[in-house]
Length: 357
Image 1 (cartoon, rainbow, N blue to C red):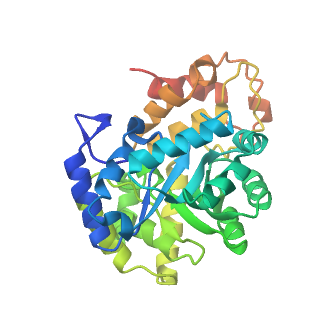
Image 2 (tube, helix red, strand yellow; image 1 turned 60 degrees about the vertical axis):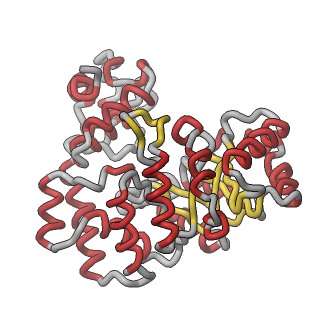
């Protein structure tokens, strides 16, 4: 989903450079390629299919995903899979994932008989193994694993800043204990961990460590982690990641390395200006404001030196009624906040930073 593009247009993949990067990666040991129906406006699977010509298809396992939010029948599922196989120029995918499962989508997939449909796709030879990618809480994650015995893998968002977010460490260990391979997405928190603010960079520099390499090594160090997905958009990133991977293995990190990462994590928490723990005691807001999410985006922008990304998320993924600008200064939330945050005072500051300039 982060292939090189032309002119800043996410749908226009630089096919020449993408082919050079992907084939270089495969030539140097990468054997798992992850894509999905909607990536790059539907063009990711097409480009991956071109890259995997000339014998490269036989060198890798290909994973793609059913667009669960777009299907409303088993006929839809079949049509999408057939289209994906055509795009990928292959007669089968090694891993087919139900994309982005959460509480609602999991219920929908069960009601539509997606698992029975998928088992038929396996019998027909179009799919080798079934998995799912996930964005929700641990209890939902546990329920999905317990609800079907045919999963071979799961894909979760996980990094040293997200041990308690979504499936988290508990989910990683639960999946591994139940025999599932665990594929990691967002190992660098969508790029937030790549160029840290000066306070964090000083910690890395004092230890003479690279933040990207350490974030990846932290994951590869864990025995429960099977595959780490790193979205690479430049050849230099491919080379660096291959070099990092080539010296990784389970149990490689020393206690001093793990302590360094704990100190970095603590420093990130320290420089977040709003002491919100996302306990949600303040919710629901009578005016519909998503108070924890507003604070999270603001804190992320400050802590990770990525306010531009927080602004995009605020504008693109939050409705107007959820944004800080919808706060009516009623203060009903403040008496419920165990952290004593002056929420009504923070809201205009949050919108002033995240709102459209």
